[in-house]
Image (cartoon, rainbow, N blue to C red; front, side):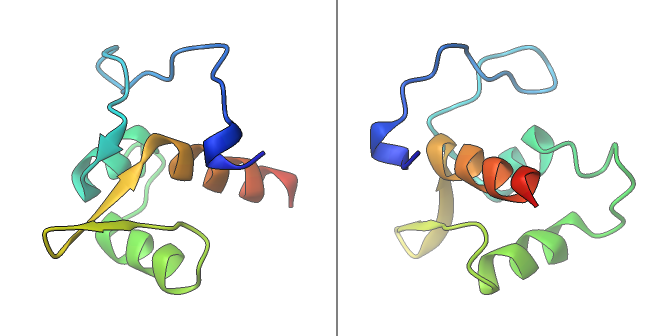
Length: 82
């Protein structure tokens, strides 16, 4: 399911219980994916690895990479299917 076709039947939540924002900074994605909680020692490098290999598609706003909620959910769906 593409990001533009997505219609969430649930509200994805951040670790603190707040709804996930539609556009996330790197730190938000790291928190949403709970990278530190699962033991990833350098989550920034891991996120860059996924981005550079085309597994997680960023959007550039003002020269900074940001990630849409849909792109993060698509990433999770792709790696879950493996």
